[in-house]
Amino acid sequence: MIYWDAHECLPLHPDADFEAIDRLRQLGVSYVSINVGMDMNPVNQVMSTIAGFRSTIAQRADQFQIAQSVTDIEGAANGGYIAIGFDLEGSMPLLDRPEMVALYASLGVRQIHFAYNRNNSVAGGCHDEPQGLTPLGHRMVEAVNAAGMLMDCSHTERRTTLDIMAASSKPVIFSHANPAALIDHGRNITDEQIRTCAATGGVICITGIDMFVGSVEPSAIDLARHAAYVADLVGPDHVGFGLDCSFIQPQLNDMPPGDYDPQHWWPNSAGYGGDVLSSLGAAPIEEWEVLPGALAEVGFAPNEIEAALGGNMMRVATQVWPATF
Image (cartoon, rainbow, N blue to C red):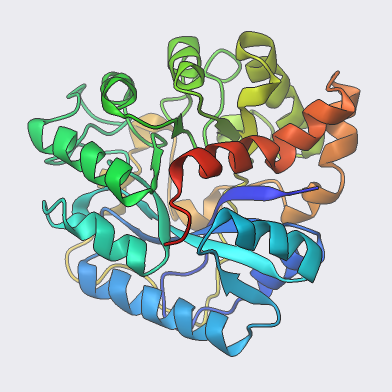
């Protein structure tokens, strides 16, 4: 069985410890997407992070491998290692240049969304005024499709997500987002967004962040309830998981250099407060062990459990990724 974790966060520092990723490997996760930068992170920080992560992966090739194809993920499931892809949260690291997409793909970035909570020159963020996809944004969607990268709509406002899903020639995903019908928060997504994503052939991956789940200590059964809502709305072929744990390492300074205002990116008006990365809780990655049972408890059949844990994302990657990057 393929276990696909669509989004996790290490410190954005080249010396980040990969112990948490090794724990995912030991839990049987076959593929994980690791964030390497957000809209507030300058390109020099993003590039040094990618370089450091790639070095760590290369030094521990028996445990970690960068996924160059869907076949590599199947190999991970059978070979005892974990396949890894990187993701970008926002388009600002693209520097308004569509050709940057292919460059990042060559470095291991396998998925991207275009706005991290706030508006930019490409797309609208979920905690900002509705903007929609800009003309440059349409060119960026074409570049993402051409590069074989997964087009993600997490952190992006409703109008922009609908524009992206209309513009994309490939299935679109939400790598870490939950139904707003269950928890009314700006980071969660409406039934309209869920239905439109599913209509592209895409997948909605449930996140374990406490305020988006609606539980002080999120567990597998909480995630399963959100997954069941999506399955009831659009079918179990459109359910996945991206737990979105932030593995803080206090010894590393991974804050963006220069003028950086956390309140801008995580506004108090949206319920965030203080040091957002340490104040937000998430379901622990160990919940992967009990997710199958939790999904069965909320009514998923065995084949539907297999699809939700990774099969659905494998299907989309097979449709979107090239034969090899």
